[in-house]
Each structure stands twice: as C-alpha cells, then as structure tokens.
Figure (cartoon, one colour):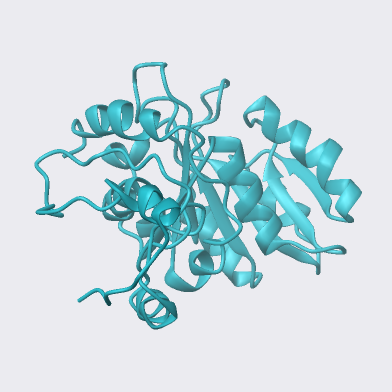
Length: 257
C-alpha cells in the first residue's frame, strides 16, 4: 500500500495519470514498454524489486526483452539468454566476455564476413590472437590449437559458403583442450538444430534473419548456461526499438511455437 504524502501542486501534476488504476499484468498481447525506468515507492520497495529481479532500469531488465529471452532459452534448450541489438552485438558481447589479452581464438575460416573483420581487425587491438582454419577438417582444428586457446567459434551452416560443421565433434575437441565452443545457429535455427545439446557452450542467433523472416527488424540472442550468460546481463546491448521487438518478433516467433 502506498504511503500518503503531501506534495506541491507542481509535483502532483507530474504524477497525474502516471499510475494506471485497475491495471492487470496479464494482457492477452504484451504491451510495448516505451520507458527508460520503472517507478518504485521508496528505497525499501527498490530493494525488494532488486531481490526478485524485478524491473527498475530499462537496459538492465525489460519486459519485452525478457519475453524474447525466455522464448529463445526454451527453443535452444539452455538455461538463460541475452538479447542484443544485432547478431554481431551478440557475437562480440559473448566473445569479448570470454577472451582477454593474451588469449587465442580458433575460428572457422568460412564465416560471415563481418565476423572475420571483427576477428582480424578488432580483436588484435585487444591483444586477442585469432587463427582461422577449416572446421570441416578435424586435423586442421587440432593443428590450430595453442596452449592459450580459450574459445572455438563456428557456424552450424556457414554464411554464405554453406559449409556444414560437425558440432558434436568440434565440441569434443574444444573440451578436451579445456576450451569453450561458441556456435552461431542462425542458418539452421533451433527448429533444425540445438547446438547446446550437441556439446556447444553458447548458441548465438542473428534473429534478423530466419527467426524474424520479414527483413524488418534487427536483433540477436545468445543462449547458454546460467554461469556464462548471467554476468552479461548488465553489459549486453539491448534492443534499440521496442516496437521492433514486440510487433515484428512476436509475430515471427509464433512460427516456432
């Protein structure tokens, strides 16, 4: 129950209409939350909201973004997902969280062009070493491993060369080397393949493509274990336009359901 307080007329004007009376929180269709923050009554209410991982600041936690993350977690059979502003945002967020200066990334040589640019032009500026090899060749993968290899990265079906990688075999190689496997699942989606069930540590999707299917929205997701993804919630790049998230992705992802 809200505490009764006396405010000035100017303050009262600011609050008129800000709180909807008789509101139910289970609408048939999810509303679009066009807000940067969510109101609390006082510091005690704020602490209580934090305790249940409620909504306070839009970048930290957003109902629309959480709805999509919940769906992607189910589809990919993971424990938690993050939603990013694009597929490349998801890729860079995950990999930069797993790699540090002096680490080595071993990646497939037939990847989405922007990934290769990221690996060859950006990662070296952070002191991250990158080697590209043919991931359809197990001997090439074994030969590309180094003592400082921390992550192996590939796509289920490469864009645009359409090469197909044996995810289960690559996961085995990665884990034997105490490294993690990150897989871009964009071209197959979780309808056809679930990389986590084949041993991958993280499954990434550019939701812009087949998941959306309309060519009218841009977003990305990354799904993995609770430990891998939880720490990324505060640094992930959220959806830029909530209208895209609800109006476009809710329609497109109904296909998965």
